[in-house]
Amino acid sequence: MAESTKRRRRWTNVDQAQLASLGGGTQEEMPRVHLTRHRAVALAIFVLSAIAFLYFVLPKLAGLRQTWDRIGHGAPGWLVVAAAFEALSFGGYVALFRTVFVRGGRSRIDWPSSYEITMAGLAATRLFASAGAGGVALTVWALRRSGMARRMVAAQMVAFMTLLYAVYMGALVLFGVGLRTGVLPGGGSFAITMVPAIFGGVVIIAALLLTRLPNYVERRIHAVSRRTSRGAKVRAWALTVPGLVGSGVRGALEIVRSRDPLALGAVAWWGFDIATLWASFHAFGSAPPFAVIVMAYFVGMFGNLLPLPGGIGGVDGGMIGAFIAFGVAGPLAVVAVLVYRGFAFWLPTIPGAIAYFQLRRRVASWTEGVGQYPDLESSEAAPA
Image (cartoon, rainbow, N blue to C red; front, side, top):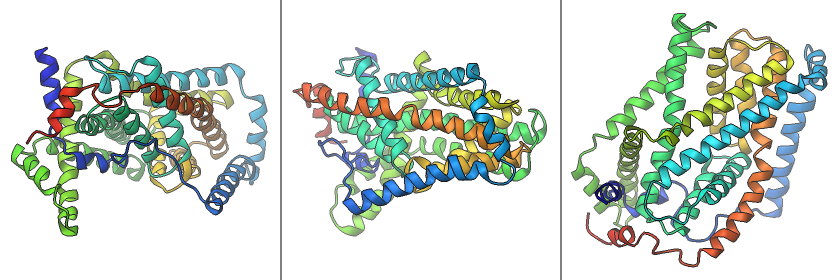
């Protein structure tokens, strides 16, 4: 009981306005994509054009035709292994979701619900741009409808993202420095190794510094965020983001200190996805050093920041360019990356779409959307 009370208090320092900064808002309706006919046609044309270029035009350019012809002769065993690795990656994502959002106490979110929320969120992340904002919005909506308090959702959502991307930033530092110094085989220029490593280090240090944000600053955040003038809203946003991140990072650190084995889902999510890429290389030839695969993978993932649906084109091009920078043969890099993206992008799309409709039915059965955590809901009205 004492541990449960301590855990609840940990998440109550986040203001309701901070939830809106996650991109999910506080509305209770299921997030939907509102597209006009013109925008829908434009989106469809873009996606089809990008896929056609990546999978049909690019491989037929000079020097790639012969390698692309090998795709029909890829080792079936390695392709099956790649698909299995990708499925394990999704399993890691579900495990991480549960260790963050379903840690003791009562909850409507069981394992099937966790699967539906995460898979539907992954499908939204794959199909829409803005670095996964669509998946975040859907996850926030489902958590709110399960009865979880706004403040808890906000802080735990940041804790979830912190655990997930701590692995990303840590890998940039570890493998970037290791490759540059020669501790890890593969080499690589300063630009492709140390620049990403420096970026990762800066992000980690900044996140840790935000955990030292004094309590009086958080109380100031709470007060300023409730003002209604335009200038106050700008100031509130500037104060809210550090407070929200700091609170979420502290929660993530406590999860790590709890030694919950499900927290390793963050490592499994990235690790098995990288293993899918590694298996894709083996399906069509020999794979470069594993450290090179890891570094090129994470550098390419920056393409998700581009305003492209599912990072189509951005991630593919980034990974291919990174592999070529490490000295991997261009034709092999193109085929391996495109096959990997076929697994990583398309494999969760159909199950995710099915999970989306299953989630709608499940939430409809949750007739009491508020009150699952009455102590937390009532704490929102209490002064900080």
